[in-house]
Length: 95
Image 1 (cartoon, rainbow, N blue to C red):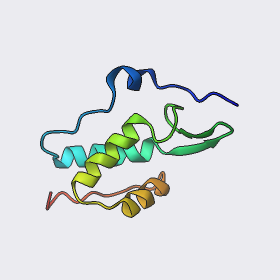
Image 2: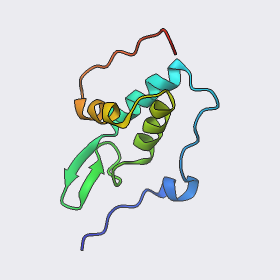
Image 3: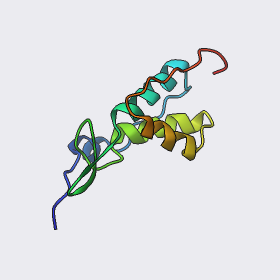
């Protein structure tokens, strides 16, 4: 069996904390985290494309939690993660 890489930062810090109040800047950063930290297939299983840790990595999970807190369902988040390099426009109103 091939050993999966370990995210040392995650071992020390645990999960990244959620912001007290989720602002538009947090939403934009969460979308960016999900787009940059998407899965890539490797012989050991899916790894984060950005930092080569087991997918979903620390930043991808944080992005999902932030976007879920704004009411986005998992199926929408999955489609967002699949879009990859396409530009995503986040509206500046209503958040």
